[in-house]
Length: 513
Ligand code: GLU
Image 1 (cartoon, rainbow, N blue to C red):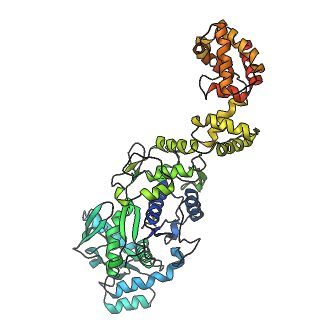
Image 2: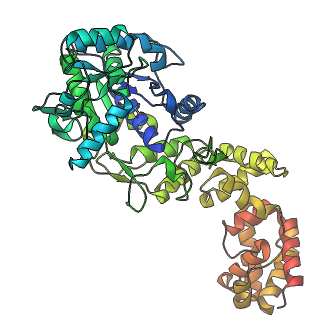
Image 3: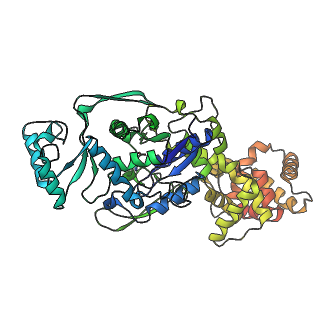
């Protein structure tokens, strides 16, 4: 029988979710939806030293903002609850015991000093990467080297120990990664990883495999940084007797900084001039403990649809030239086969471009709402009908919703200065005279549509024997102060004849012709 597709996003609450993490969540979500399966979220909080308060809530809010819906999670529950590893602690012990009983794991009683001494010995002997492994374990204090009675005594006496995986000395571990194809690793390069710590808490490796098995996960889609752990995970599935239902692995390509010089990391914060986090994060400086604020896409004015569309393309392409995809369209188009192996470079201009596309595609009434709200925040009032006209006009010049209010300022303020270049080239007595005439006639106009205003202007200029091309730039500067902006006839129409005429009179009186 075909198994139901079940994928998981398994973040550790060690800080804010980085955009790479959001991309991992997104690809999991797309695959689950595409294949009619389920997506769950599991909090991997076995490392209590790295726990950061607020991180879990941040992860939840980020996914909600992005529209990534979870079928099972610590918040909505589900058939495999609990979904926080710290709450599942008692479940892992039996699997570590099973591995010991079957000869795949062992107790290790080495003290931190003994481990340091081992590393120092190996370093002195010029061993490149000193590890606790199939060779070195023979010299250490563990249940493979100590007599059985001594091990029993140590356990009885409550001596601290960890449980380590007994990695075979000479074995090829292979698995078929859905993105990278066959991955073959020699077991001699894998160390005897700790599976259970002395406090009885499982490590990431054990908890992750046990939970993926119990939660019936069919596909593990995660970042490339986990590729080196995958062979170890394959061994764990085998030794626990779960190989036949082992999930398929897909390791996603790295996300690089815009210049391609390295991995885009959480530490990049705002240094590169764009956010690396979906939402603003209030944290603490690791060294000084001072409060820090890292910017987020949401607070910077990005629309979730644009952010998601952009992220989807960081490592995947649909195989066509289409660039704009709603979430539903992404679900439809997504396949793991089209995820690239090669690293994806972050492109700041591209994410802005996406935002512009989504912003401009919004209904004018919705844009008007943004405009009214931004203006209100600045203490300016605007009625809904005017707001809609202005929003429709200025949207082509906006990347973020707040740009609408900036672009709208020309409707609130008469020019306090005039673009000097245009004035020096285009302003002269003839032009000023023609505009004065236009200003006189404007208030009599019955029709104030952009077309009617243009017709009136053309008439006035014809009478004066001037071509429209000779005055347009000067007229724009006289009305708005600036050399560039949205369509001038629409601006004058929205300002209305009285205000336009008043602005022209102001320009004529202030600018020497
Ligand atoms: N807890 C790991 C992380 O924080 C999950 C890795 C995995 O998906 O297996 O990325």
